[in-house]
Length: 152
Image 1 (cartoon, rainbow, N blue to C red):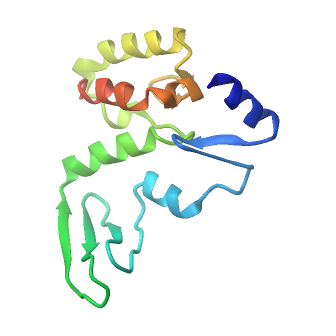
Image 2 (spheres, helix red, strand yellow):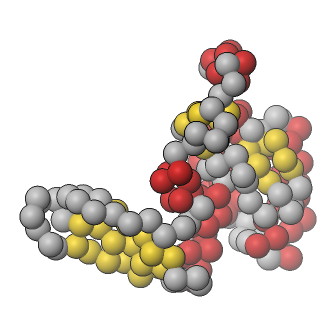
């Protein structure tokens, strides 16, 4: 797997999100809007969209039938949006700022875990101000993100 990553990087591709590579400036802008928790319009059967209202949001999903105007809505609370912002931002190579998420009482435990990840090669950028998963970290993203979320 790592040799495949090296080959792609050698060909000028960047690992810009957990499951995608692109040439610089050719990343999927639509996908990045999801990962950045930005508003995303969705039209058509089974399409899911998101409206970011600042501290809260609304996720909506259209019905599965063509011509059906039925849709469902889910209100995303401020706390839920905070969690979503964190785990989505960790899925792209821009990373996140942990200071926005981790309360001071858990900071020392978070720093210890970050040091463990850093020494294992799971992070490219490893500060509390800017945390970015490496390609190796992307392979374990769900486990890493879950552990960090437990520190909130």
